[in-house]
Length: 162
Picture 1 (cartoon, rainbow, N blue to C red):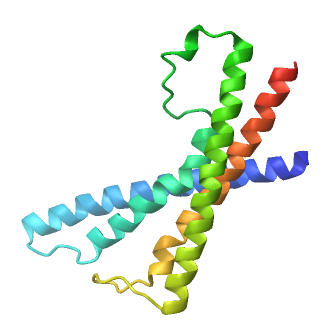
Picture 2 (picture 1 turned 90 degrees about the vertical axis):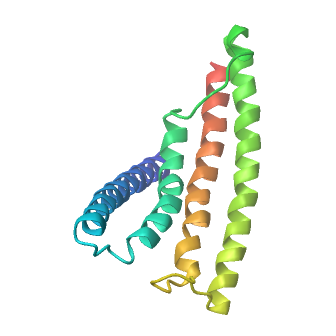
């Protein structure tokens, strides 16, 4: 089981770095597009469309690692006064709720992605990209996000027992 956890961690680190590479690509691409648009009146026709797709990919690629590192925003206005044991209990409950919601979200993402794949739906924009290629990141990223929520529950449970 420890090996599976190590492999999972390596995969979410790779996904996180892929998100960073995509962010770098669209940042540089958008700058080049703006320069070409305003100086030469020759914008990159597909740059805006690719940027839109990447903006969907980035959060789904990075979310599991952000959750693992607990780098997300927490509103702890009420719980910061609780004992450590009660904070852990609340963390277990919130991770369970997050895991359930992401499980549903992932399942629905699979259904929509498969539907678009089966119907052959393409985007209405310049590249005519098959929509399932755009949407498939939702169930993929959702899967890793879901697994990380449930891993957190076990981690919190171990801390509660100690």
